[in-house]
Amino acid sequence: MFRLSTAALQLIELFLSSAVHLLYGFYIFSSAVAGDLSLAINALFFKSNIEASIRDVGSVNSDNDLPPIVLVHGIFGFGKGRLGGLSYFAGAEKKDEKVLVPDLGSLTSIYDRARELFYYLKGGQVDYGEEHSKACGHSQFGRIYEEGHYPQWDEDHPIHFVGHSAGTQVIRVLQQMLADKAFKGYENTSENWVLSVTSLSGAFNGTTRAYLDGMQPEDGKSMKPICLLQLLRVGVIVYDWIDIPILKYYYNFGFDHYNMSWRKAGIWGLVDCLLGNSGPFASGDWILPDLTIQGSLRLNSHLNTFPSTYYFSYATKRTTKFLGFTVPSNILGIHPLLFIRVLQMCQWRHPPDVPPPFKGYRDEEWWDNDGALNTVSMTHPRFPVEHPSRFVVKDSECQPLQPGIWYYKIVEGDHILFIVNRERAGVQFDLIYDSIFERCRKHAFRKIPTMPDHVE
Image (cartoon, rainbow, N blue to C red):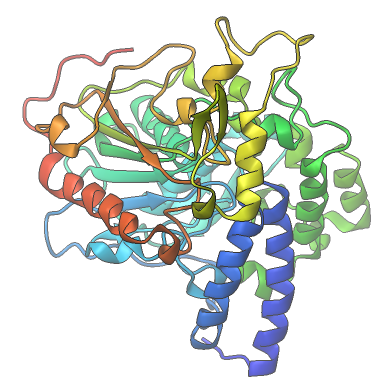
C-alpha cells in the first residue's frame, strides 16, 4: 500500500473528475451524477488510498448462517474500492453485516458482467466462454479472483441479489446461466443458487432513452453516425488506450479483455478501434445494445422467472399527467439536467417509417419515466412474454411472500435517487433500503421441499 502527496491527489482528482464527469454527461447520469460525484470525491479523496493490486482477494464473513446480500451496480457503476472508496449505493451496504458490492464492467455487456459476477463470488479466473469470446473478438479469460468472495455458494448456501438499473438484468442472466449449467467445471449449478432478486429501477424491458442518445431504432444494435453515444465511444476507447494504471485503479470501464491498451494494441490498434473495425463497439458486445427495447427482447426471450426464487421490484417515476400530457413531476425534486431527460422521454415518438420493436407497441405506454428508464420497463419482465406479477402499495400486501412472482411498487423518484448521494433521497433512502434488507432477512427464505417445475 502506498500514499500519494496532496498535490498528486489533487491532480488525479482533477483529471479523473473531468474524464468521468464528461463521460457520464454523455449518457444516463449526466451532470446530476457528476455533481454528486464531485461532492463525494472531495470528501473522500484525502482519506483514501489506492488499491495496491487489481487482483481481488477477500470473502464475506461466514461466522453465521445468513446468506450474503449482493448489490449489483448499473451502467457507469462501480463496486467497492473504486473512486477512492466512494459508495455507488451511498452506504446502503453498511445496513447489514453480510453485504458484498462487486466491481463489474461499467459499460460491458450484460452477458460479460454476469460471467464476471459468478467468478467474483466463486473465485478463479473469469471465463467469458470460448464461443462468445471468438464471436466478439476478445480474450476468453479475464480478471483473476485468487479467493472468491463467497466460495461456498451453492444450492445449500444461496444468495440474495439486489440490482440497480442494468444490474437487475445481470442478475437474471446469471441465474439463467446457473440453471443452464453454463460454467465450465461447475456441473452442479442451478437456479436455486439464487434465493431472491430485488430490482431497484431495473432495466427489464429496455429504454427509449437509448434511441434518444444515439442507438438506431431500426435494429437496436447500431449507433447513429453523429450522436452523444459516438462521443462516449471515442472517449472510452481513448481512456482505455492511454491505460494509466493509477487512473484505472480508481475507475475502469471494464474492457480490459479487449486489449485496447497502447501496450497491446499500438497506434494502429487505436486507429482500428476509432474507425469502428474492432473493439466492443464494433462487435456490439457492450451495454447499450442490451438496453434498447430490441436488445431486451432478445435477452428476455430465454430468461425465466423461477418458482423457488423470491422477486421484488421498485419502479421509479418522475412524471405526471397535466392537461392530457405526460410531463415531469415535482420539478424541485429533480436535478435540472435530469429534468431535461425526463422531458425528452415524455415526448419520445417511435419513427413512423420504422417497424415498432414488438407487436402492440404504443408510445404513450412508455412516456412515464425517471430520466433514464421508462416506468413500464421497470416493473417486471413484460416482453416478449409477461411474467407472473403483482402490483403492491404496501409491503404488508405481499406477506407472506410467494416465490415465482414479481411483486412491484412504483416509487416517486428519478433514476439516481437511491445511489451515490444519500442526501438527495432523504428519508426515502432508509425506507427503501431498510425494507429491502428486512425482506431478505425475515421474509425471503426457502422451504423444503422446493416448488414444482418452473414456469417458462
